[in-house]
Amino acid sequence: MKLDILAFGAHPDDVELGCGATLAKEISFGKKVGIVDLTRGELGTRGSAEIRDQEAKDAADILGVEVRENLGFADGFFQNDRANQIEIIKMIRKYKPEIVLCNSIDDRHIDHPKGSKLVSDACFLSGLRKIVTELDGNIQEAWRPKFVYHYIQWKNIQPDFVVEVNDFIAKKVQAVMAYTSQFYNPVSKEPISPIATKNFAESITYRARDLGRLINTEYAEGFTTERFVAVSSLDKLI
Image (spheres, rainbow, N blue to C red):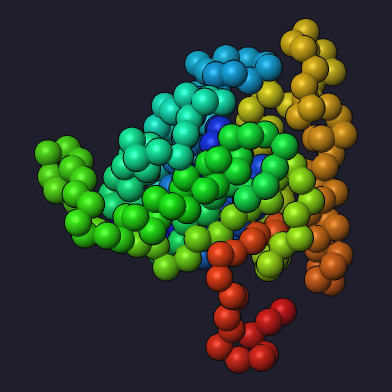
C-alpha cells in the first residue's frame, strides 16, 4: 500500500499530540496516511503497554488513518543504530510516502530527539539502492521521501511553517484523549506525570490557538523542516 504521508512517533500518542489535526485535515482531502510508533511506551508513568496498544488503535480509528504499526523498540533505550535504521527503512520502502513526519528535533523526553534523528537518517538511507532490505520474502525497492518535517512537542520550538487546522482541532483532542490512561483524569488513582495535569490537557488547544493567533486564524500546528520551505509564487501563502 502506498501512502501519501507516514508519521512516526517515538511513543504512542506522540503523533496525535504533535500533528493530529494536520493529519485529520490531510485525510479529509483524500490523502492516505499511516502511523508508525517506535516503542509501545512501556516505561510510561501511567497505564501499561497493553493499554497503550488499545488506545493507539482507538486513536488511529478516530483520525481515520489507513494503517498503524509498532516497531517494538525499547522505550527509553533505543538507539540511532544500523539495526533500528533498517527497521525504519523497511517501513519507508513498504509504504513509499511522499512526506514523512517525525518527532521534535529537541524536547524534554530523550526519546523524542533520538527518534527524530533516527527517522530522518533512515529517510536518507532508504534512498540508497545498495542498502538491501527484505520484507515478507521480497526484496524492497529503494525509496526516499520528498519531504521530512518535524512536529513540535513539549518545548515551544520556533516553527518554520504552520498549518491552519481550524476545523480539525476537535478531532485532534478526541484522538489524544483516546489515551485515557495517560492524560488528565481527576478521579484517576494513577501517579501524576507532567502530561497528566489539567494544564497539559488544556495546552493541546491553547498552544494551537496561540499559533493560530500569529497567522490570523483560530488554530494551527507548527513544524520545522530540514530544508528551505519553497512556494511557487508569492500569493500561495495564507
